[in-house]
Image 1 (cartoon, one colour):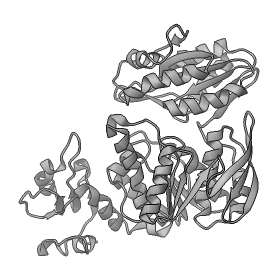
Image 2 (image 1 turned 45 degrees about the horizontal axis):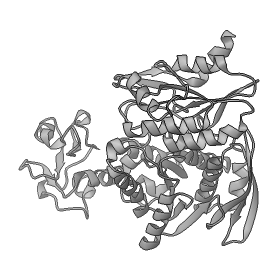
Image 3 (image 1 turned 180 degrees about the horizontal axis):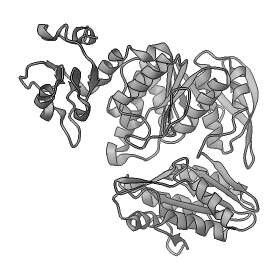
Image 4 (image 1 turned 90 degrees about the vertical axis):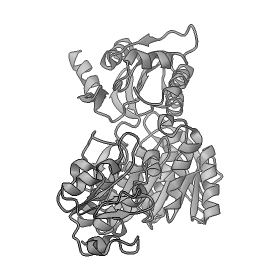
Length: 483
């Protein structure tokens, strides 16, 4: 591909660059090779413009800038960050036009909805890619990576994955669209077949600053989708629905309260499953559903996944037939042990997540509900007391520990959580998470439910600059092997 072809219709380029070949596109100065186009992006701690001249010396075919530097082989545009994924998409042959790309955004539920959608389409015989918190999967083998954003990859990696999916004849790709990814314009303007919204509660304010900015970032998805699926049981979901109406985005609303385009009724929850009636109001049809995950919020997740796949053109009865065959999602209300007492792990790591998880588990515990939880280091510290408050509201036994402390003092994260626990309420503290888990298992009695909250599927702890293997399933198995 030439520079002229890459920038056709975008902006004028120097005539001498028109026929120059492009071997790669990147914004990372460490990746520049001879013939690469280097896109200068100004970040929080590094400005690509500062090394633009050096990149030309190192063999870059041209540099893209939003500040005029007066360099040879410089292409100046209005917003280099916003244009970067557009250039990547063109360089890789506009791969997302070759399959149905669907995105899910929201604070909680993204991973569950995305993976339910993927399992549904795979069970129906479609090659399906997944990109999200559990890892990346182009349709073959799931792989995990901790080097970079854990939910939505940076643009170059993202479009490499899309290109691989297109080459492998992937039919669907379901992706978690994080607020940071949306705010940083990691996606090109190619429309998503479906954009789905789960809910919004306090999280990531260390990045966004205010809940208003956080919401505005999530809302950006609905400027890029052909169809929208929105949970209107959520206050911000209702705002998204209004926004879609204003923008003319085709919209289907969902609810577990019965006032939406698709809704559930007669919900029955058991320890490891749920049953409900799903109604398509416009079609005047209702379907009985059995689903292998419990909790009202998982009923909502299942409903959102079903409607998302349905809007890609799959009949609802086929969608639900596949949904009933699904056993669950790793690290989402996953049972690790079921004997005299039950041990589950879940990714709940916010006040809202803990509230939903523990309020659902409380009535299912025949004896006590034991909660093991903690806050991540170097992340939104303002939510920590609310996490303590939510856990204390439902759990009979509180064991406060760490998540991934990173560079922060683990005891500091614990102290911040404990602020929200009512004065005089007993709790135990462990800076070592494995010790906290072993303590919970040691004290568990017949009829108890032990909830390991916060890590979910994650098989690591981030301590300092390093990632250490830490899989709660293995830890629980190890405990029982020791007897």
